[in-house]
Length: 368
Image (tube, rainbow, N blue to C red; front, side):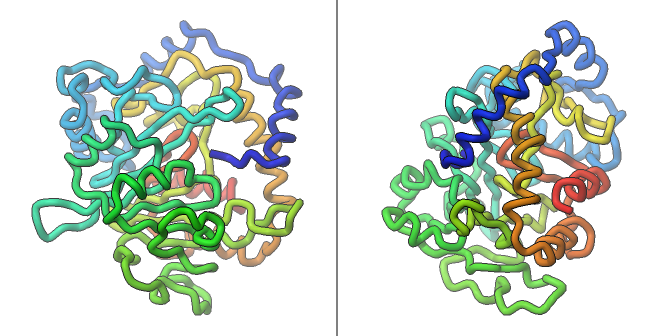
């Protein structure tokens, strides 16, 4: 859901220069490596790193089976769609942490699948049914409606930045009693949507370690518990061509599960081998039951990864970050100096990453 501005058009054109850098891996090579490291549904393999305990893994697998008939019958992929890098399991919803689910979908920009992901969080409940908190909504079809109904009642719908709101009007119409929340400036930018509110400009978690008047205590009514799901506004970047905020993103941290949600601040596109996280500085738990390897990554998606990693990321850091001191404070708070105990990162684009040490290493390289 990246912008279709002049900047993105230039980025797309520049990808033509890098296609020769993307060397595809054959299906046989992919399967050979995947067999060595991937785990299967129902396998009781105990060789799992402590950063992703076996008890949690098994709980998530069981939740996945409850939501998908194929998995409940012991099949390796779900019944919702074919398996591909942007929905590895082929399910309508995939458990990501306790009480946290993702809706992984292809998303096409100029016929290139850049992937997208919605996150669903079950809020604490005193009764039998959970309220649901929806982050970066994807297209709402019958299968997704039915799956959400199994989890609870849609209560909050969040558009976290200027780009991830294509389907917000559809969700507002489908769930008129839910509260629609946007990033700073979104109510004026999209007055056609009946917003309940927007996060204040510059909002920080209540545990922010420097003086600021804009904390979660300043948000008005019809909002969720901001200690349970904590916002942090990335108010340090601008579009260099307009001087105005580009994404204007708010990232969120789910306290109960230790999960960080990002949309365009951080992405994690896979390598051409089709194995999740094979490019990261870790050899542990790449493929597993709910994130299997795939045979191929389309050429366009491989080129997109090259463009985002090699072209857009340096451009962003060198030309779009306008408040380096504040940006460094944000990065350090996220990584190791704040109160966030991040165990899982769920990006809107690309694969999830797990484990505090790995996450610190990856985000330090990306953000600082």
